[in-house]
Length: 587
Image (cartoon, rainbow, N blue to C red; front, top):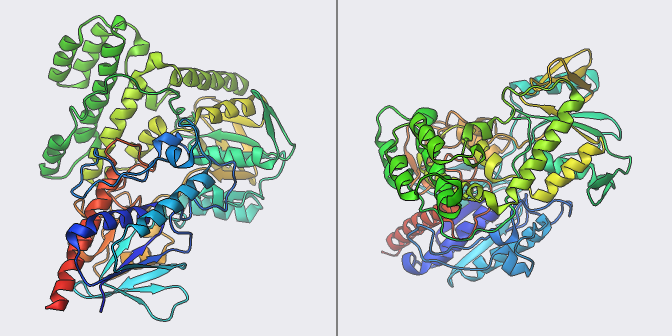
C-alpha cells in the first residue's frame, strides 16, 4: 500500500507545506510513490480568506513587493532554497501598490499549481472539496480522517492540520450580549471574518456601536461606505445615503498605525542583537516557566530600542549628542530600562526622536476631552500626525523598529504561548492599514459617518439598548440598537467550531491547550502534543491556532520567514517518517 499523507487545509499554509515537500523530497524520500490528500471545501491555494468570491474593495494590507510565498537565503532552514516571484513581480504591478485580495488569491492559486508541478514523479495529490470532521487511529498506526459526505475515512500514515484561522463559539460575555440582543430585538454581530459577516441588518442612517479599531474594523468601514455606494472626491466623502452611522472605540481608542510609506535605504540594524537564539535558549532553560512581562519583555524592549537608535545615530547624527560608538557601548551595558532612559535623555535631545513603547501602546492614557465634539477633532489630529510621520523618511527609525519587530517575532515563536498581548501590540505597530485607508477614515469622520468613542471602551446593556462609554470623554455615552465586535474570533481550541479540533480536544489523552487556548505543538517540527506533553508520532499542526503561530501577515522577502522555517521542518520530519515506513514495507 502506498504511503499516504493527509493535509487538512489547502490555503497558503497547506500550499507552503507542499512547496517544502517538493523541495526536500529529492534528498529525503525515495519511496515507491506517495499519495497526498488535500482536504478543504475552499479553492486550493487561495483558501477561504483569499477566495475570489469577495468584494473587490477589500485590499491587501501589505505592499505588493512585500508579499512572497517563496524562500530565499535568509530563511534558517535545513532544506534547499526555492526562489520565486513576489506578488509585485508575478502580477506586473507597481511595487508599492496595495493589491486587492482577489488578485492575491490568483497569485496563491498560481503558487499552488507551481508547488504541485514541482513534486517528484510518483507523488500524487488528491483534492477533496469538503470538510474533515474527525481524526482517529492508534498512536503507532495508520490514522483515519473522516470527511463530510464520505462514508469511509481516508487512511493516512501522517496527518497535518493546516486549518488557518478558526471560527469559535461565543465566550460567556458574547453569549450574554447575544441573548440580550435576541430578547430586545437588537442587532449583535460577534467576532467574525468581516468579509463573511452578514451586514444587511445594519440599516441606513442608524447608529451602530463598533468595538475594535484594527484591520477587521477597516474592512467593516469599507463595506459599509464604498460598499454601499459612497464615494470619495479627493479628501471628501460623498455619502450614498445607505450608510449607517458608526461609533467606534477600543482598548487603545485609536486605529492601528499606518503602514510606513517610504523605502528603506542604507545600512540595516544588525539584528538580532539583544534578543536572539542564545537569549531564547537561556529563557527556555530557566526552571519554573516564563513570565512574559518579567522575563521576556525587557529583552524585547532593549532589542527594539537598539534598532531605533542604530538608525537614528547612523543616519541622523545631527539629532544626537554622542557618537554611536559611545552610545552603543553604554546602551549594551545598561542593566535596566531606567538606566537606558537616562542614557537616551543625555544623548538624544529631542523627545520626538526617542522611542517610548509604553506611550505608543497607550496613546490616550490620561488624556481627557471636555466634549464628544472636541475629541473628534483631537483624534483626527492624532491620525493626521501619524500619517505624516509614517510617510516621512526623517523618522526612519520607525522603519528600523518595524524590522526589529519582525526579528523579535522570529525569536518569540520558539518560546510557545507568550499570551495575547504581544500579538496585538505587534499588529498595532507593524500591521496597520495602508495610509489611504486612514485618509478615508478621516474623510468619513468629517462627513459624520464615523465617530470616535475613545479608549477603554465599555459596553453595557439596559433599557433595551447597548450603551458605550469611554474614559477619554468623561460623562459622555452613546446608546444604539446595534453592536458589532470588529475583530477575529480568538483561536481557542476548546471553543473551536471545527469539529475535528473539538473532538481531538475532548478525546482520551486529548491535545494540550495553552492558557491562551492555543494548540500545543513541538516547536521543532510541529508535532501535536498531548496533555502529558508527548508529541504524537503521526499528527502535526501548523498555523495561527498553534502556540508556534507566526504573525498573520504574509512573509516579506529577505526577512527570515519563520513560517517558511516551520513548513520546512514539518516537511522534512514527514518525509523522513514516510521514507522509513516505505523502506520497512519493502524489506
